[in-house]
Image 1 (cartoon, one colour):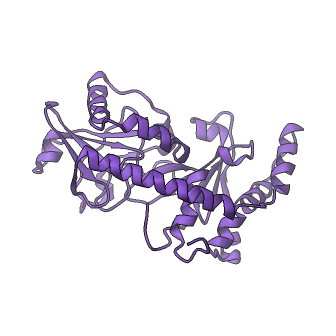
Image 2 (cartoon, rainbow, N blue to C red):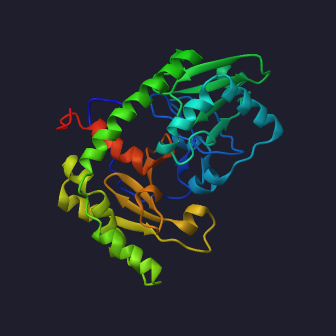
Image 3 (cartoon, helix red, strand yellow):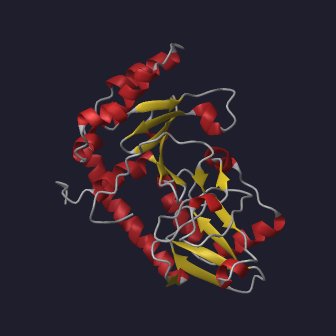
Length: 301
């Protein structure tokens, strides 16, 4: 998500499991969930309550479609020749770069021909969504930000440009994070090894340590940051989903962080909640490279 303004989203409320809308509205970033899922097709000016709501984390674990739906998904994926190759280069930035999909079925009562006669396929990292005719004879691409028509080549070029930018930002984000402290991380990893109790304060201290460069770089207000941070939930072995069982959920200035009790950066994910659009789960690497990208006053620019 490029831009000339800081795009950091401050999340005020905790994520409610049944409050995530799966509808993609015009002008919003593509947000997704995988599996055997469908939702009502709604126009961009219809209220959110008309859309089917989904359980974010449960839906993220689904991986199967019906035979008919899988054919549609396969057609969509195969319509972009380099998709699998490009996805391999993007996987460091997403929880599930290629397999996380929203499939919206045709709505027979719609007056819009694309809503009436086409499946809508949304895939994690694509700059466009894919419309597949229910008769499987036509495929149309629409940009997720502006709804304009795109070709498969334009989609591939947009992804290549983004990947080149990511390579540039990766080095800058590494420079930003030189000399980061690890005292809290080491202490918590020792506690895990010895089976000691991890308190909410321990987890928040870890967030403060691991995100210290981002907080300073983005000039996040220290008092507001401390007041807003909270542990939303802790790993629960009896939890319904993998996220319930294996992750701390922590609200902070950079969204909701999903933190495994390994307390390693590679095991941190970032959930962005944008209300009408739904959710997307990024890796920690996306968060730190995005920090550099989003701050136009960066000393690295």
